[in-house]
Image 1 (cartoon, protein in one colour):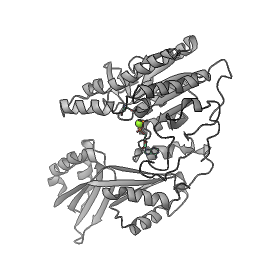
Image 2 (cartoon, rainbow, N blue to C red):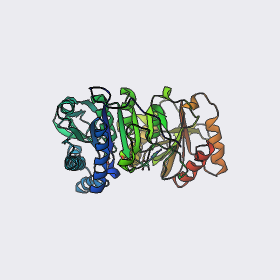
Image 3 (cartoon, rainbow, N blue to C red):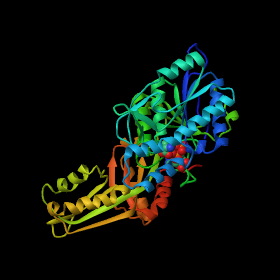
Image 4 (tube, rainbow, N blue to C red):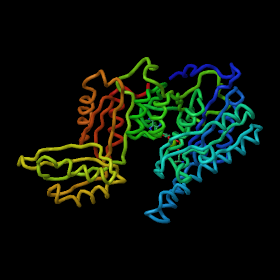
Length: 433
Ligand code: ADP
Ligand code: ASP
Ligand code: MG
């Protein structure tokens, strides 16, 4: 696959320097050597004439360790204290990168979320960004040519002044929000793959890199399991029209000419994509659990009696299937919830047993959701039907189905996930070569 053509006007052509956000994920800053490598990527763009805001994640594995410590300290820990703990990973990397950049002669300063500030709501552990103040950074770009190194993932709840975090993978969202705030011409997401692929390249070696993908498709891919971008970052990019370019930090910094073509995937408006395929990509998620309520009384109000209490408990129900049983008086109802909520969901349904009226509750956590995504499905019929046939030929049983305008999902046995993904990947001609 060829290189992508110039992304935007070349830098350094006006008095006002173009601005760039460069985000580096955990594996890209995993140790000091990698941080030095990142610094060389940053220097390259500074030398090319960009004012740069860098957003960094915690070093690979650090956030997992911090989360594990919180859980170990107390299973029912206070989310405000969880945030105080897990936000530290990014603080370390931001300081280290600033030190390394300074050592290379690049004027750089680190910034924590609370210092800028990046203001969020008060939903600790999964806070939403409300406002980003880029004024001080812009002043320093103009007056000092100073690179900003921002700790991703964290913000501040204005009302309480406390540190918040944005949910796992949240540095992507910090980066896109930063790009919108400073009017960056692009938000580069550097990671351990050189772009967005037709499916997870770790599972399907035959997956192909996409040169471009529409915001809406990326949003579905991310929501349905592809962890390459946090869902909210794509939402924000779409809303604020930020051009997001996913690329690899493992390419040698010196091998990239910032003024020429470079390899990666541009997430952009669908109008920019010329050759729209029917199917763009396949996502999968093993974090699903299935609950079946057997022999529910088939009468008005029963769905409300089941899903009302689940909603009250903030449990997200995804797929729902209802079957009428042979007696005609009762029905079987199957639905899925995130596997993290499985036990809680069972308790909620058992508590409501007398109002719902059912015979038995069955459940399984060894299920997976495989989803096929593509804007082209809007205008092509029969795309899902082909999948059902191909899966049947592979003896993969479908437990539930959902469809919407640009995607459909099937729930299957978890042990058949890779086989199902590979089958569908080949079926829609997404294989490389
Ligand atoms: P970072 O630490 O840089 O934020 P992540 O681990 O969050 O990186 O995301 C990158 C990973 O996402 C890749 O290593 C890849 O295994 C996974 N991934 C899942 N689906 C896709 C996809 N469709 N395209 C590219 N990568 C994907
Ligand atoms: N360090 C955080 C995480 O691991 C945020 C991020 O990397 O985007 O979830
Ligand atoms: Mg990530």
